Image (cartoon, rainbow, N blue to C red):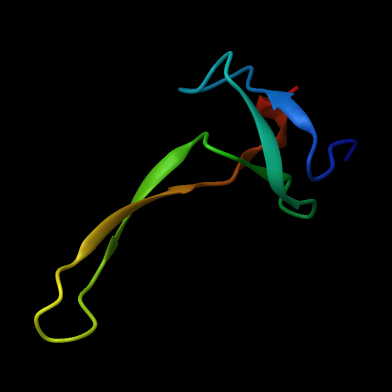
Length: 69
């Protein structure tokens, strides 16, 4: 794989097409990369203690390396 962490890439396929971002993490065996601020997914967190509220946070999900250039 020619793409490394901290490289600037542009998404060429998918819902974030034509957006640019920096690579945070690379998974060479799976052929996936995590791009900062793109391909966001929502994760629901349960309450840990009584009286706390649950939260919904957005995380960058891995995307296929074929979809970035």
